Image (cartoon, rainbow, N blue to C red; front, side, top):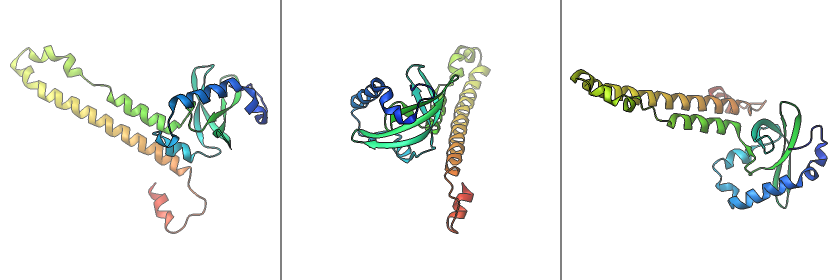
Length: 188
């Protein structure tokens, strides 16, 4: 993390240890950036793009925005401005490193992961479905309801993801639309 109220020009020299740790993590990944699942999103980031940045000292992710992008022989670096409860901070991270992530993709993955949690009420109540012939006949109905609930949650997740992504797309809407692009932006 950077010191509060630090001149952004001095940022690169501020915490060489943290930069060295970032480089070591990148080397450990030994992954070509284009192999990352969110490569296209990361590649599209520009100044003012919203991101989440990881603070090692706080062991927490913070909402931030890219304020500068630089390139050197080691890669592409994002200067990210973010706020903790106490201070406004600036941090420089590798565009493809583990300390920065896309907030929308993170939310979408979290929603999808939450849905994968089993809804297994029927399994928990299995003994109660064996009490009588009537409860045995109710078992397939209960299984059907449980499966329907899972399907509803998956649909709800997909709708939420679509709305979030459409909102992000609208932030990219150009000021001067052509006749061809106007219907496309209206659809979004």
